[in-house]
Image 1 (cartoon, one colour):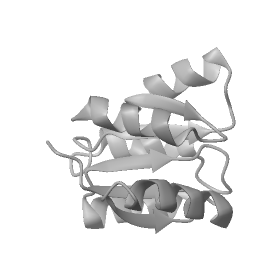
Image 2 (image 1 turned 120 degrees about the horizontal axis):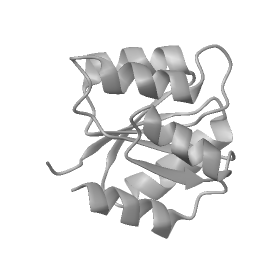
Image 3 (image 1 turned 30 degrees about the vertical axis):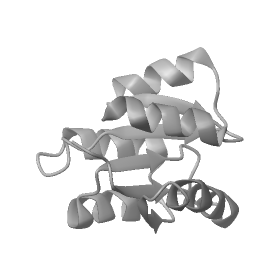
Length: 121
């Protein structure tokens, strides 16, 4: 499946802007959600080709939102890449256990992120 539409879920307006710049310059259509709850709702409504998920957010955190997306019948086919400041190996393992396909730490290296997206195609 070619990835064209990407949903970025992050509570930081700065991070959403940075991710939007990196992705739109590569021709992706990017939509945004500001927290885990709206991220899960947008994933169900819009059915993007990929979700890029922050972890540390108020309310439903990124691990919980990833689990919700990857276990729901409507959205379980959508890959999730976790993108967070939490860079410990235990965090990466926990992210994978929630269903994430990959894990990127902030500050985001655009080339690394794009490689990980390409690897999902």
